[in-house]
Amino acid sequence: MFRPSLTATILSILKGNSRMIFRCLSRYEKITGGCSFATPTTHSKSNPRSNQTGITCGIMDLIGAIDQGTSSSRFILFQPDRTVVASSHKESRNIQLSEGWIQQDPGEILQSVKDCIEDVCQQCREKDINLSAIKGLGITNQRETTILWDKTTGKWLYDAIVWSDTRTSEIANQYATEKGRYYLQPVCGLPIFHYFSAVKIIWLMKNCKAVQDAIAAGNCLFGTVDTWLLWNLTGGPNGGVHITDVTNASRTMLMNLHTQQWDKELLKFFDIPSSILPTVKSSAEFYGKMVDTSLKGVPLCGCLGDQSAALLGQHCLTAGEAKNTYGTGAFLLFNTGTDLVISQKGLLTTIAYKLGPNEATQFALEGAVATAGQVVHWLRDEMRFISSADEIEVLAGGETDTGGVTFVSAFQGLFAPYWNADARGMITGITHKTNRSHIARAALEGVCLRTHEIVKSMAQDCGVDLTVLKVDGGMTTNNLFLQMQSDLLATRVLRTTTSEATAFGGAIAAGIGSGAWQLDQLKPPSNDRSFNPMMSTEDRQKVLTRWEDAIKRCNMSTN
Image 1 (cartoon, rainbow, N blue to C red):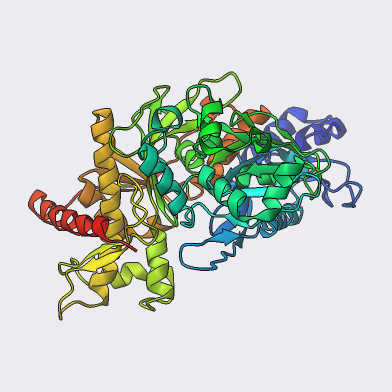
Image 2 (cartoon, one colour; image 1 turned 180 degrees about the vertical axis):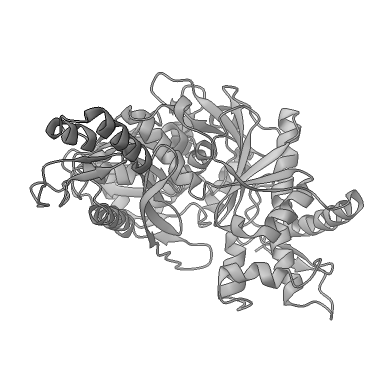
């Protein structure tokens, strides 16, 4: 429908002094972003994307991002300049049946996403933003988390097994003992470890009769969270698309990094039927349309695993650039461009992104730390050191050092570069003078030191020293923590103004997939604060020596 601008409307009425009026109104539109008026509409079930006024003020080509993480679901509407137009957040519920078992209800995951979408749509109506301005939707998600469901009913056959769940350690260790931890690495880029989806599928096939029956009947489908959402949002049992993107597929141990398709030999190795697997697509292309919610009919056209999305959202588009996201865990990705680098130092080779079916695939080296923000939650929930997570900065700042205390928070074992599922956390160096501030500071220092190990391994793999580390995630609001990170890396740490880097990365993929946005027209985030190393070389080496001793002890610990 044609929507005349305010300037054109008034000029068509007032012909006299048109030149003067044009100058005045042009200046007005430049300031306000321009208001266009459509015929007023009434929001109804038959027209769910309409709002009550039909007014759009300076809002063009919005992209929505579904950010489904371990701790919460979010839906955020972005403009191309990274402006957040509206957002909604809903916390996720973890189900912990026993030590190391972490699962989530797939139905709750899906409903939380829909609730966030509806909340944002209501915000848009209240702000007089027409939902037709939303040109596409992207998904970014917790990776590796595994869901199996019945394609005829849409009912999940077991709860989602979360990426950090350790129940599959025995299965992974059996394969690793027989063939070696890195036996499959040249093909899939990953060590054999409980972290990845393949062994979670095997556990479900062995232990869940509903899964066994569904596979026998040819009705079982597998997906990580992105696939589960895409299938349901595009129709579910009634024509939903069963797809994933290359970044999520690269985290299963089932995809060949060279062909970027499911690998027959890997499937044979794990004895997993190909019939349950989704089709692998690029990260930015049309997948299907929403079949319900107020965004019915909007195309879903972007998909990235959360860490790949954060890399894109931080504008790390060039080989040699790196970002670290400090969430429940910490995940450092180093862009290697189109070079597929197989790590010799315990890191993961993963796909960074592929922004279109005919675009070049970009790769990355990744270092994963299982416990980062989780250690702060542990100090809050289990130890009662603090009542809220943001209090950790004040508590840790109560001392200028850790008093010789070292905290290795290996709650779910040690990930990169050790891949030791049997390691357990420990606190060393406690004396009668140790207080809560020492322990809190040591907890933050431990996350920084695990990151140091990963950066060191990346430098050895690539022969390049990191000059700046871009950071995002919940822990990066802590200035003390980021200064400690810079000190221990002896490298500049850069916090950008993009607080929603992961979600915006998902929006970038959808913007490109929808044709509404162009990558070369998107600007990098502006800098919020730069943290530069202030620690002396001597003091840094003392901390590193103390850490090396603690990490050796931790690696020797057993259940």
